[in-house]
Length: 366
Image (cartoon, rainbow, N blue to C red; front, side):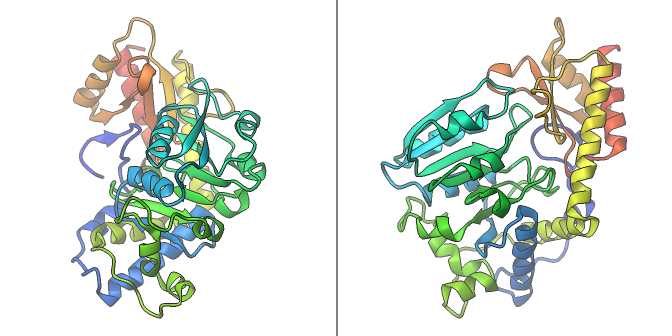
């Protein structure tokens, strides 16, 4: 556990115990052969979790927001048309980052709480360079069909935010046609925030910006650092030193991924699904209304409408003070009218469901 408090919000989840213990292990040097072995294994396990065979799959040494920036700065050439599906806060952030890279951004707006309309997104421009979408929108608790976007993308590259989906719900990058994907460690992967699991296809890498605006996030410079498979593809015969890797964080991610794959990836997805469905059923039995569109609700992140006459901030404070439970406020225009309750990673368990429901009943007097 991160602390004595139960983190059930949209941000960092309580990490898997194995990931926490790994942070306390003796530190390895970032050029130590043992660390290089751990990094290679971590990249290989990330390929499994992403559902890809791409050798350029690695944990970037920064949080998920840097993963977003890496995705765009390495693939957006000035003047490129980038179609962005916007159905929440993180779709909005995509438009900002793409514009800063010099893209001609075509924003396809949706009502918050609704999934992406695939047909509208694909029809938004006849020949975009990139189509970008959020798989699991953290601000609204909605899942969108990125597989359908991949099926209809044509020559465009498909860029996907999988921060809240990776390790929690089905994700198959290669089968779905995802060319560039980024995520974070702090949600369903059950690791402290600090790394951005990232993948890029050969097709996207060939089209990359040769000199991106960011030195630190230049994937061309990182090519020799991603493991033996990447080195063989690059033909260098040796690793290329680029930066000092956060060795303890990589070891923690390694431990969490090992735990996930030992349990079985599909079993982990099923555990998240069961926990989320139980929580959502319990909330509705209490008379609370769910925010995300039915049929598109994330099991790992449930959004709930704050009841009329209830002060959202007061309830959240009482949950924290009286029960040691943190849930999140809504985002953007729904900051005061929606709660976000996360059951991710280690928290996707029946006891966490019961704890959350009992605490809410107590605070709400239901």
